[in-house]
Image 1 (spheres, rainbow over the protein chains, first blue to last red):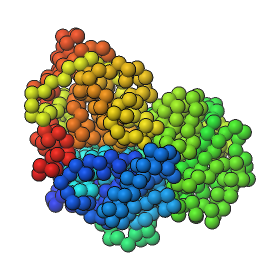
Image 2: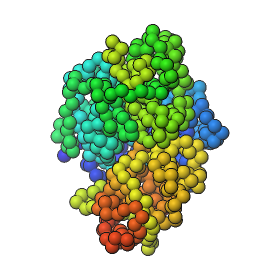
Image 3: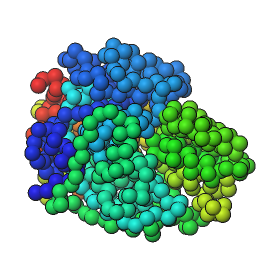
Image 4: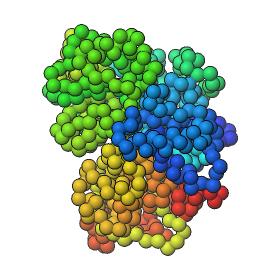
Length: 421
Length: 179
């Protein structure tokens, strides 16, 4: 029986010629990731294990990005714990404030993940690296501890959903709109336990940043992983960022999929997910009059340079609406510097936005932009659950950087076309 | 279901000992996410007893006040979706909950529950046939779920052997230590 991209990568990492959906395997790991929230719990678990140290100091990444720069004493203690552990174990890829970026933007940028890898991370959005043709998935802290100690993790080989993307997206339709459309279509558990494999002629029109945004949100459909085939764009990205060897796996022609969905990208419109689930999607022409108090442009979904360029293009020469707080968070230091050099930060500040050092901060209701009772935000983040960005009676509307930037200017949920763009 | 197609329920045969759960049910709907199970504002203090103080806070402010040791959570589809925070099953376990029954679980929560030794059962019929306040007994050896209040019962099926070994070891860390 033919294998999917994901199944081929997993087979190669457990020494088998082939695997099939439902099979339980123990796979070798190329990278194990944790952050300031999850790594300290994993470190506590690892201390209970009969091991001398980590399996490979070069194959672990500790990224202090969630409550950083340390938001309070307790958070500072967590970061200190992770830092001491990293020092004791000579962890090569330890990143703290000053070098840190949001983990899922940072690791590809640092070249730590390439096509064909198997990666686990104690963060649900670890599925992001599927954009590079890797298998990557989120786990908890105990799995991270076991992964750091043994270099292995157990998996149930997933079945897959195939998304055949055709056509060219319209001007303001981004990867974020495509993935929101898909989640709206299949629901927040529509891909439960499954791989989401994105293929088709339409992917030639998707930049790496579009693809990262899409695989990033595979988890919001319940998916185990999201993955793109490797093309010239992926290879160029990997060559620019990494010196590691990559390996390309293609799905067999007779690979089995639970479902195949064909989506004509040219028919999609900018899409917004209403509270309190990412599946509650509406196209921009159906959003009605939703006034907002805050806009957040950033996160592991949409804090990359292309996202900031689009937002700046829309905000250039304009000012944010009265009474709206606009927070722009470049996802990594490199992106931040690039945004400064390209004049994007100047545009944001002149428009009345606050620009922050990289942090996950407001996305998970940590800090740097918490909502009060009854407040509403448009955010380029990935979750709009109850209380996600602050008070349990606040609301988050998920959107693309273009919609977020346009909404910042109008003070209500708007597409760029409303500004005549 | 997940590991045995055509069968409806999965249960944890925990620790290989005679083990039962008995308690009053707290009932929730679809898509209970880990942000409401334990809001991020409490993740800076990962001690289980601290996390237990805020369990379910954003969807049920009464939960922590009313939950008693042994009580059971019953929910519908996709329980534990969202963030991978292991703090979520830790907070449920530390709050005294003896078992979570759901129609389906989100995959990271499912892994985490097994890895930390929080008993979970996937059983659509039980999830539908049990209401808030019902008194429910779960026999982990036989896989039976008894709704004592309504006089109904539901049969579960065992996990695959590999996963049972983890569960019997009281979690992944002990399982690896014993290997």
